Every structure is written in structure tokens, then in C-alpha cells.
Length: 216
Image 1 (tube, rainbow, N blue to C red):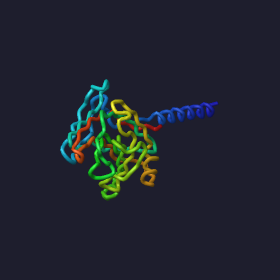
Image 2: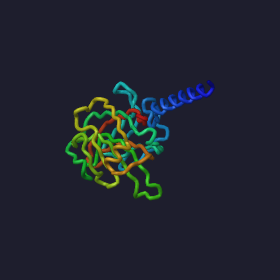
Image 3: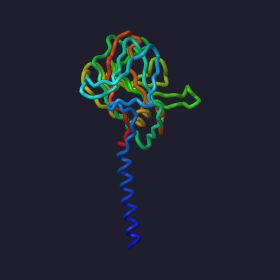
Image 4: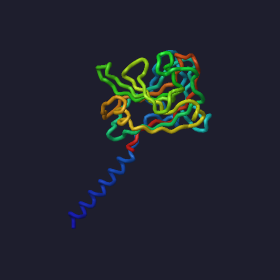
């Protein structure tokens, strides 16, 4: 009888462990509560202004670019074998006019979210997967970043169709990385976001909601 009880207890513990794993969440950006802890700024051309804002009816991180290009990034190791799904929401008020995002002259986006795999000391092995709100490329299109072959770009939203509205996104990073780079990865090292208009000299407003990884 004792053995049976022990087996039942072990089975119940296993079920609890599986439930916890299935519900596991790793928060990366707590923008809804005005928290930028561990996020750092990286400037490329001037300073895109990032601040908390509630004008859309919810607290979020507002990015305002006036011919500028700077982003925010957080160094955080994410175990993709446990939490492969990246979740976030975003909103833009408009897209950019007359830009070809596949070229250096048109490499501007009202909103983009990155995941980065570090190359360690071999900096040339750094690889970035970039999800963008494209101004003109069709949803689902994929291309190499104009400045580096180590970055792949995927358009999740395009044009004005959903502009002015919050849109939720959910991507399996392992699957997307395999599709775009042909490699299987177990972890990522950095999450970043950027709103930039330095090449076109235009302006853009974008809002970013919380970013977090989940098991499913």
C-alpha cells in the first residue's frame, strides 16, 4: 500500500511539474508597468526618443523617431528548449513613404523587434532575427538586412492596414530561426527593439507592449 501511495504521489508531482513547465513565462519587457530595468540604449544616428505613454488607452513604451536611429536592448539568456515562444504587442500610427526596405537607403522601420544569438568572442558570428512592421513589403516576406548578411528580416505587419490599432504577435523563435538561417538553436542572448527613420529622414511613432517568452 505504501508503494502504491508513493507511486501516486510521484505521478501527481510529475503532473504538477508539467503544468508549471507549460505555464512558464519569462518576462523581458514590463512596459505596461513603466519598467525599463536592465534595458540599455544603443545609438546609430541621433536618438529615437523612448518614453512611457498611455494615450492609446494602455500603458506602453512609446518610440518617437525624427530622422533618428537608436534602439533599446536587453541582454538576457533565454532557454528556447523551455520557452521558445516570443510574445508582444505593438502599434504604429503610420508607415513611411517611398522606402525600399531591402536597400540601405530604405532601411527604416516604424517598428521592429530583434532576437540575437551571440557569437561569443567570434563577433562575426552574431546573428539577428528581425521582426518588422514593414511600410511596403508584403506580410510574410523575408529578406536579408541591407547592411549585414547575419540579419534576416521578416515582415509581420505591412502598410496601413492595421495602423492605429494594437496588434498582438506570437512567434516560435526556434522554428523561425531554422527557417531563416537553416540552423537549430537552443537559446538566444539579446532582445531588442527599434523605431528608426535616419535613412529616409521621415518621422514615426510606435508603441510597444510587454515582451515575454512562453512555453507554448
